[in-house]
Image 1: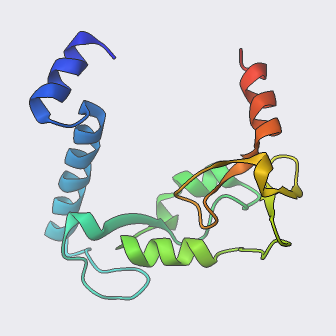
Image 2: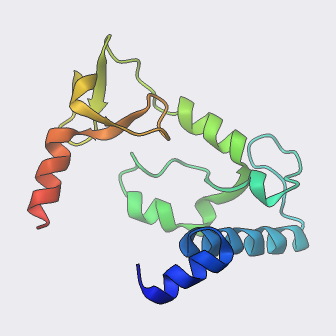
Length: 142
């Protein structure tokens, strides 16, 4: 972290990057409200605060045959409550794994859950890729 960024973080009381992202979200939500576009794509109710505001992909992009195109396609973007967006993401394409197993999105196998690092943002609290695949990717980029 640069000295300048460290000073900014100290002044703000939070990491400067976190503060910048919060400001961008507040600005975007303000503009969305000015355009009367603060209606949730999923539940059709008003989004009242920036904290409950999220950008949503109408068609999930990760498993699409053109994921980059779908990610950046503005026609595939909508606004939703963060809770509505997360609830849908948790149910999308979820496969119930065998007991004590999780799916590795890289090697395309169900593996023992001990083979995965923790990731609190995922529905099963495990990483997308197993430790072995993550290590291969990490050392390949070195």
